[in-house]
Image (cartoon, rainbow, N blue to C red):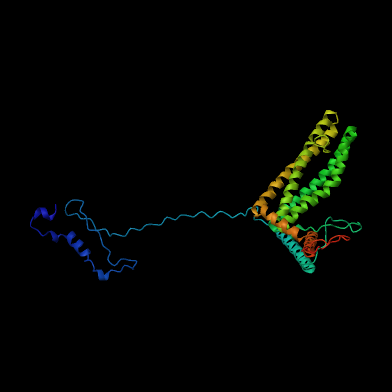
Length: 358
């Protein structure tokens, strides 16, 4: 029993536990004594005693401490190891090879520039095509250098046309051999062999002069007239290539029809050879059509037109020496006729003047 039950009028603050709690607590300090930057708080507040048991039994006050949050220690995963790709793994030999190639190209360009400077802008360049040996009595007829004459953006198409011309010449030679084989197997195919020889000796130089040299000058001088001439001749070349690939009898070509004739006659080896020739002729015809479309697209993109071709043709004709000579002679003859006057009367003719009669 506590003292409250024995003496209801007793002083409740006289209890020893109350006095102890009162002495343990201190008055709160003012704001001027508060230091927010100190690690230890100036005034440690304590929680008041809580009486959860019977009267007279007070629990000891518990000092309150600020809550501390322990940071979670997370171990970051190491970054993945860098492995260079196959394209980035360039060895020193590759660098050296590229450097040598660049040096070789630079030396070639320097040599060509030196040649052009030595020759001069107005001096005629020495012909270098066809590349004939020095002992040949006939020298080169044309000057051809795609890397010098043709602009950089058109060098690829001109080079492809040059390769096409060489393939065309090779097909003429193979067609001549095929015509000889066909003539041996079928003596009635003598005209085919004869025409194949004629084609090889005529169309090989004619194709270079008529359509390759024309397109070469068209890209070199940006000439619409040369483009027009090339389109006309090269379209005819395309038609001839298609006819040769078919191998129509009597045309001097060893194509698919000649191949079928060889197999039907029992000549298996000859049929295989003619099949290869027919395939090569078909590839030549397809390549010719492809190059014709390619050049036409470039022609349309460069701003050339038929009117420009007409103007170039007129200017070229007027600059021709023979045409200028003929026009000068015609003009001088017209001037002489104008100042000479009417022709004189023939000799022996007499004119009698009659006096007027009065």
